[in-house]
Length: 305
Image (tube, helix red, strand yellow):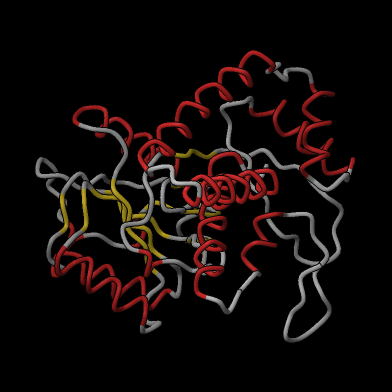
């Protein structure tokens, strides 16, 4: 259980949550707790589970390193020993692994991750069956007391994260979550704010968020967007466009089709950034952006409010 200054303690088996809640006063203990928390965080980001095991293993490695150091071993030898042991462990684990393929097996694994909730486990297995192993599955809180529902919708995910952590809307999970945002697409690099000022003013009046997907956003453009977000005048985020060269052009075209954007602004297009209206922009039902990925979920009428 994790005690809180206010309210009832939180009951959890999540190792990441537990280690984050530990705040030792002694500096060395705090440093060790931070190392374990970082390890658990990376495990959580990469696989979404196993944080308790990861925390225990990290703590044990730190303990054994301390013993070896106290016994006179030099730090380079200790490091080389850890790396050699890691390779042996990975080799052993790979020899024991078994692919999970059937819906029942997926449900069993999902049930364990859901703290033994078979209903959630079966729903997750259903999702995996619907979209495949390469599909994207997201979880949303229901509005009101609804039964657990599965909804399949168009969407896409690409390996580009937010360009500034100041865009984050969920500080605890360090991610951006937008509902019903506008989406501006361009193959160009944005260095100055002037070209997009007209559309930013329209966005601010609409009250809806804006996601900018560009070759890059930097300098004055990035700092001005961040400042407006921090002041609360504009809900905005920016990410780099996925891919490179012709591949980037194709992927931006795919995003335009998915979101209903009329234009992907580039040097060849007669329409300029300054000419854009809200009707020219793309939209999505939801957007979720981490430091590494951007997920676009569904599409909505760009004229909806």
